[in-house]
Length: 150
Image 1 (cartoon, one colour):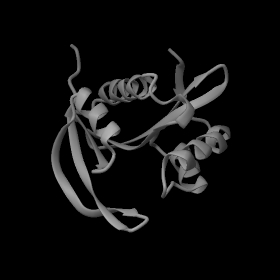
Image 2 (image 1 turned 90 degrees about the vertical axis):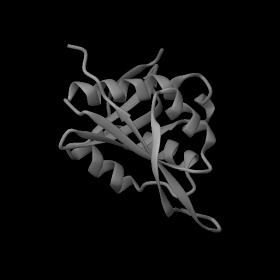
Image 3 (image 1 turned 45 degrees about the vertical axis):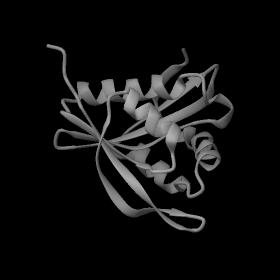
Image 4 (image 1 turned 60 degrees about the horizontal axis):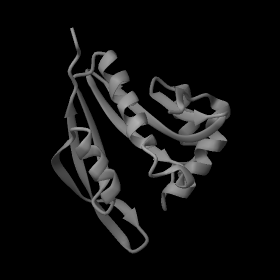
């Protein structure tokens, strides 16, 4: 399985290229740079110095929020998202968070299936949360309790 490490500022161009492949309304380069420089946990998954994907977590008072996760189109379907998400869950748990939250587009069936396999449950919806080419679409709010092995 590929390696996972902390994202560095010099990774942003590669991460941004993956973001543009993955989303119709991508984060900006500036948002990624801010995330790397902030207290957020930003990770990349790579193999032979090629970045294959990334994930970004925010921590606030014992809660982790998955802000962004994406695998390069050419590398999807190989279990990388599962591997990366497990790493992010483990990191959040080690940082003494008791729950992880995320939002996902209602139309993103592959992501929803992954999150459900990883133990996330739907806890609500945000109406008209995400922009689309033809208007807006709802977000599903999901949560995962984090348990620390003592």
